Amino acid sequence: MHGSRTLIRWLLDNNLVDKLNLLTFPVVVGQGTRLFPDTGQDTALELVESRATPSGVTIQIYRPTGRPQYGTATADMKHVTMKHVTR
Image 1 (cartoon, one colour):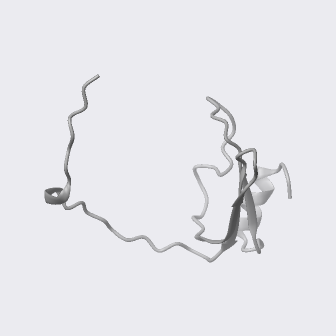
Image 2 (spheres, rainbow, N blue to C red):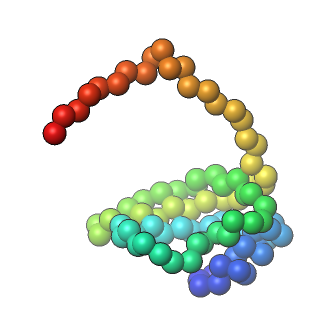
């Protein structure tokens, strides 16, 4: 399915997506429409396949795996080293 982020979001929210092909182009844009809106259910994805084209486009194939499980993380700062960089 190409082009309708509203329909894609509805299909994801209703567990009707078997796989998601995501193409990432090596371009930074300053504005545009988000692929996924700020609201809606979170969906966990499992990476099934990943490859890159000679032009740098990356193609990732994901399988939805249901609701994500979130953990907590803390940094152990005694193992962090800082280097001073001068220009």
